[in-house]
Image: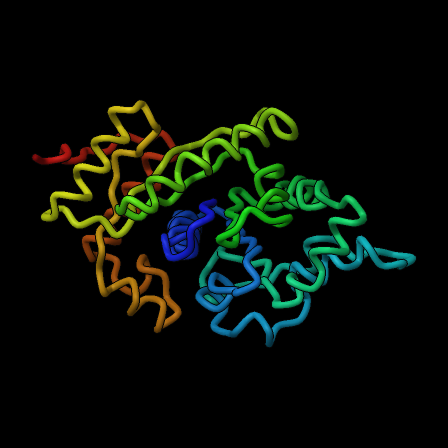
Length: 261
């Protein structure tokens, strides 16, 4: 999940897609690479700063002298939800970044996720709103990238830069990375501007996904209760939209309404 702009719903989309995956019986992992730790707090109910054995602790041992490094799976925490696990964030990521860059550890996350992929069916990576060391590590490690898009002109202008950065990383580090699509988030179907922006992006040939996630106070309630929508409000329209998005991402047939005029 990648977008350099903040407030576009990266953590919400990451956690809710992962929760749907887990509810379907798939052993699912969320890796939280954002020092703010929103996904960690959402799924584990504790601020990232209160947790031990985090992604920062795992990465720190790659730059420290230790005789035996601990395995990546020793930094994975079970969530309160069946089949859903988290490799939590930490504020220490901010302080560790320069050390990791200086030691050229950009591929360490890919190595860890390759090993974790033997134990998990699906792995979702939440990233910070910045093109930093950790975001690049995630894009180098990932097989697919989803770009949340907030329906305003600032987000549109940022989108072209994002696609260019991804293309450069594909060429230099991860030729197998696929841009899975752009997902319109906080979409207001009765407003003309969001529909206009989405239609124009589609006309430009950009990979806009057919599912649009509505703006709803239910998402804020979900954050507050620390429960993904599939558990807190399984019949809510926004929950159904997330389920449709999950199906589209997995190649399943979904009946969707066309983008109205």
